[in-house]
Image 1 (tube, each protein chain N blue to C red):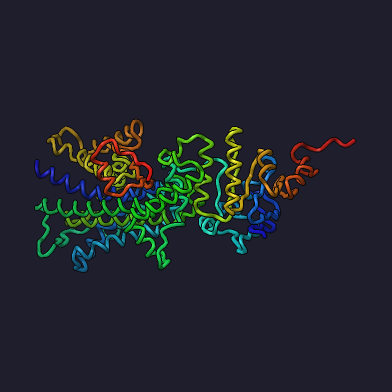
Image 2: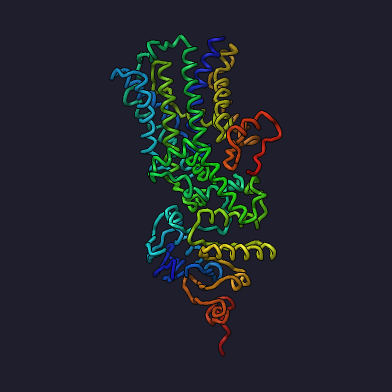
Length: 312
Length: 260
């Protein structure tokens, strides 16, 4: 039982990372993309190849995974990001499948027994789940902070403008294409890092595990939590993983078939769209137009009734 | 002095010629009106100049530079701002945040003027930069007497105020030339009167204004020069008084008298 909870924590962390990337693409910039499985795949393969074939350490393969994934994002982003809405969705869906097929053809059986990651002589062994929980959630925390800062910076502001109205953004001097591509590349890079961590945990990479379903789950995570809301997507990751492992947790694997979770995700998306399209926690109010300092915001967070930003 | 000139500007959509060989020019510091019946090509002309659409042929000279075919964001940075016929505000952001978007390229410049260091600086010191942008934005809101609505959502403002907010957002980028596409459309007489004051105030800031408008009272009152388009062609230009008595203009609006 404890084992399962730990497993959920690990996978919730990996999905939270992917969701942070997806949130950058879909939540901030408003691009509907469905290829995070592809970025996860690139990150995983990069790590497996770097560590196993070339004997690099895990820590060195981490930036390589991020860069490789980001580069693919860049290459694909330049031609496809001029598409809008549903068309972009279809194009990225195709991309995800292409990456998986290339990976399958590259090495149909995948990689086994990838060398373990180690930190200052401490080896991360798969059976010691606690160490992985700490490792993965440390990454989630770091990327949460990085992307939260991004959302509040000039770059994030421009991304929001693109999401709200592309034409208006252009005439406000915002280079729409540049910000769309930046957002896509950043999102892809985080996906790559998630793949790297997943490989460090499972020590195997199989092309069959990067199906379209993974992309849907990541998108589901963001929609469920709340688009553009950093905290919400992490909450979403927990819920999605909980649903995913529900049969094992309750010991009902004989009664509930594995496919049931796909139905649940679909239902969840429909229910969310009907009753709470903004997600469980709703859209993050970025409050650029908040004259208060960080300290004042923190105070008002704890002292109720002062939540609304006043004038300077 | 002419701040903007178009030479033989033409835009074809398939077989339709929306703008046909138009030489449009704008004098610096004045208010120029662009009028014409529906479908005369006024908005198309605006879109060519502000870069949202590319001309089929012809050239656009702004402030001595050829800006033909540049992307909209570059043209905006050179100093041409605009509003839209169907209001395009960031509706889910607050009023002050809308104006902050207009300030996008006006703030956060670093001493090295290098794009990477600039991006890094605005990333690391986002909070500080936000406050600076906020302060600027509030100044513009106060100029338009919208300060009290600063924390409201842009979409929740009354129609007239939304139009003014769009002008505020455009003006926040400190343009040399401001294009207003039917600013008084859908406004009641009181709002229109207020808009006229606003345009005069903008003119007194030294910003050149070009406006498309169907409200003739407004056009005749505040424009120094008027250009008239019909079927994509320029049919007249001059002072409001000249335009009022121009035979072609009257014909375009009211039709020709039957000849015996």
